[in-house]
Length: 325
Image (cartoon, rainbow, N blue to C red; front, side, top):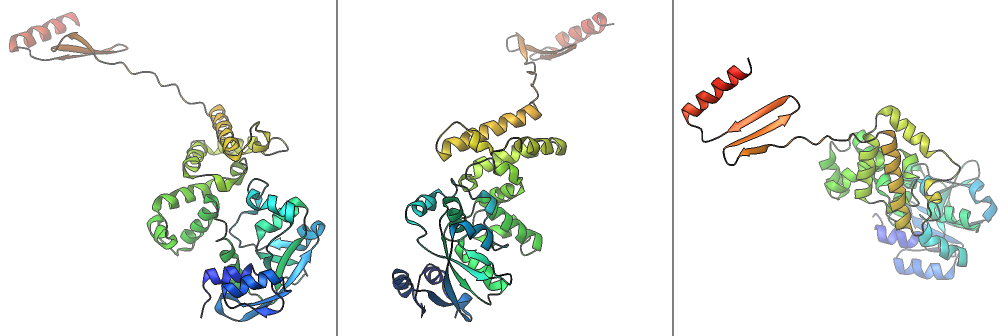
């Protein structure tokens, strides 16, 4: 029988001596005891023993890597995106071990805990991870997907997964996609728009996970209003300088920095492709109230007459014909 997600989550976050956790309560008790090994049935199938491994801070980047099919975009993990766990980790170290599998080259592939891994790298703290052997790719994907339930994916990351479903033919259109993902069509549309944007554009922000649909729609309209050549120039301009745009913003707080980044991006777009100044179209003018109005546009003149007798009409037409010979 398959393990419920909530039960598996509790087990994955448990730290145990050699023991098997079969309920969330047992996993919580194991966590308090900090045992060295935990056993669980991955995806409800064979039981795997996960050994607790401690990697020194200066070796985390070299001795570990993140599962390639992890939906979370690692390039977005910075101090702002990780703020919810980074401060605690700096003060008290890593509270819950990650989960991974051994690779043939002796390194560890992180399946659950890519955010904790990057936080340890940024904070220069030791990294704790439960590591199992013989975990196949299907089970690795299962563990990785379960992990992403703890911290919602950004619209960009969700959009990448949705686009993959469309490309594979698993769903036919956005309507089916919304049903499959159990979300609104508006969310699907926003996520796909986010996934279509270049990484360089999104990395101008401090935390991509904080970008909502209104901002994504604005960025999509801005970027795709440019010609292909100007799109390349726009992306190239974003790469000028050694630091990301958000780091050059003189403001504090993610909300304010995000707003300022959006303003600067809009200014960049307008510099590349200035908006055409629309000439105000001429409006009809009234000549005789309720009877005659005219519209003058350069050398063109339109007359609109109402309540004319047949005689008046004939005389006006005759006069115009004679006058404009």
